[in-house]
Each structure stands twice: as C-alpha cells, then as structure tokens.
Length: 165
View (tube, rainbow, N blue to C red):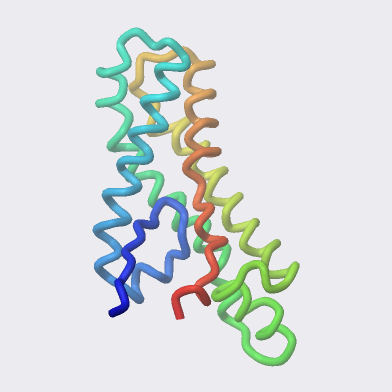
C-alpha cells in the first residue's frame, strides 16, 4: 500500500498551484502567516525592541496581507513568459518557467526576476504602509523590512512543478 505524503508549501511557491489545487489556499494563508510572524518576532528580538509584543500586533497582519500582494507582483513578472507560444520559446522559457525553472538558463533568470520583484515589493511595502504606525526607529524599520524581504521572498517559485505531475 502506497502512503500518501502531505507537504506544506507556501510563502514562496508557484502561484498557479493555488488555482490548480484550491485547498492549497488554506495551507498557503496559514503557512505564510506563521512564517511572517516568526520572521517579525526574531527580527524584533534581534533588534532588541522592548515593546516587541505590541509592535508585532501592529505589524503582522499588514505584513501578511502586503506579502501576498508582493507575491502577486512577482507572479506578474512570471506571467508574460506564459503568453507566447511556439518553438524555442516554448521549450526554453514558457515550459521551463512553469514546470522546471532549472531546465534552461532563460527560465532560471526569468524566475529569478520574479523572486526579486516580489522581494523588492516586500521591502517597500514593509518600509511604507506596514511599518508606518510602528514605534520603531528609521533604522529598525529598514532592518525589519530588509529581513522580511530576504526571508519571506517567494523562493518556492523555483520549485519544479514537474515533481508533482
């Protein structure tokens, strides 16, 4: 008898998995919230923010919501790769971006651009609307925004979908 394995992926995975497998949304929402919470907690503790509990309450929900918006920005960079069809484009970019980002250098670069777009969006969202009301110094806000960008960027965009089909 074959045992079915369940894996929890989020925060960083191919966004089209969400519409292919709708229950993944629940896992994605919960997983992303937990990772955001953990990164914010660890960064606030590292920065020695005294009122870290209060700051977390102000920050985590907005960071979570804007994190998904940032992932959509990264997805918007990936989407054009799926618009064109035919020949070498299909083999080296369209197919490999969607199913195996390591299948060609062009697909890897395209996915990297998507991850970077999301990471930059995470940074600026956190520097702006997310941390606007937080009682942190400018330096602490910059470091927290950078921490969120580095540790919560959608690295699972690199996850080869061919592993699932």
